[in-house]
Image 1 (tube, helix red, strand yellow):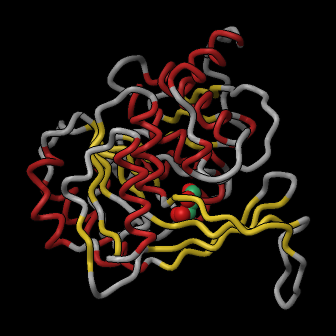
Image 2: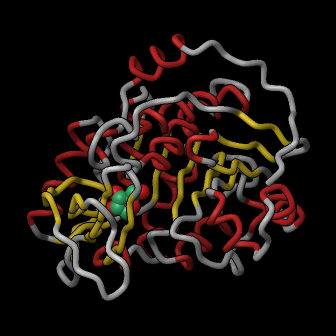
Length: 308
Ligand code: RIB
């Protein structure tokens, strides 16, 4: 079972020809509402790929909260421990998406900010028996620290997506099995520009392995060795939630195959998520990922060193 402790947001998505610069107004082309939030996205990604998934988090007592819970349930995610709160509205994310597929996001945490240590303590026993635990940084870091400090040493496998990037200080880094920053997050987290030296710095601080997500370049595994795992070329329309598709897929595959094969599987899920609009509507099903993997022969993954 995969446990996901994290955020759920309603995404308010405006399509624009170009993301506005500070002080600038641009004409939007459409406004759409899509269910999102990094935690809920990763839960649905893993469920669509065939995993049994339970989502833990909070939403408001409002129509956005209703819709997010319905969406998770429709994909078979266990939402029995999701809490509804009176004091805060459901989290929202304002997203601008350019025609190139690039995006910019501003989140208002709302109920996600109330996912506190007291809530984590209530659901802890369910998280601790999972095979894999997926975490992100859209809930308070103190809650993540609380959970990591109390987990058994070897189970569940912890995959932490440090997005949006925040300082890792205060987290027991040696309880993170796989940290999955993108290049920008890696550099913010470490203050180091090169991919490999930055990732190796995290390893020296205790993180057990780093997967750096590199968009259309695929991903890099930095463990004992550094390995580039290329991705598949697709027609990109919206990159929102591609990273979440990647993390959900990695969570699903990491118990089934080698780390490099799991990253290849996650690359395919991430690539497919960029071919459709919206966060949760874009998350692929197992059959789509299998088809893409079958269509693109597996390149032998040696260990070409990343130039960062
Ligand atoms: O990773 C994409 C997600 O980030 C969006 O769904 C949005 O809600 C923000 O949390």
